Length: 253
View (tube, rainbow, N blue to C red):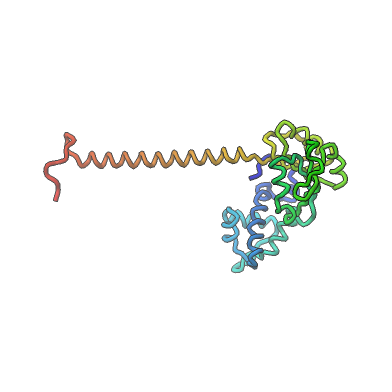
């Protein structure tokens, strides 16, 4: 569901298209599920279906990784998990700070998938003095006054912004000034960042609006189909009637 612009694609110099990079996490998620079920190999068709892409696109994406599979056998699941994890940089520990510990920030802090995917929540930060010291997901919240020191002490390069829209740009500026080069933005606003900083935006309202568009289109198509059926039925009824609109007195045997 993450959307937004990428200012400095880290893998472009390696010849991997940005569209392929965006699909790698989908493959990894599907492969991880297979690995957890102890499935040793998977065909391109099966993996493509699990990831929601077509198999030709999957094979093209994997060719950038140097992985072609074995004809009649498929892809080695564990090896692909390692390959994709390495390409995404998930074989190392990435310390992350979450700024803004409201309902959304707290939910992110409690998300159990960070550690298993190569990310470690190094700190939770909030501007409310009343939040300072309170544990969330077992981590004490720290005040924004400590933001720069926290980033430097933990070597943080990824920041998550879950603040209200009005505070997001200021928080972003401080993160960037402190050395953060990648930002995941949950605030409902567009952030301005310098070259060399990657921003990914997650906006639930936009995703819901897109779904609403598709629902409206499907409803229109169904209504149109219903109208066409009614028109066809009306033409059929007219064909069965006489010149004055009455049913013919003599019906065919």
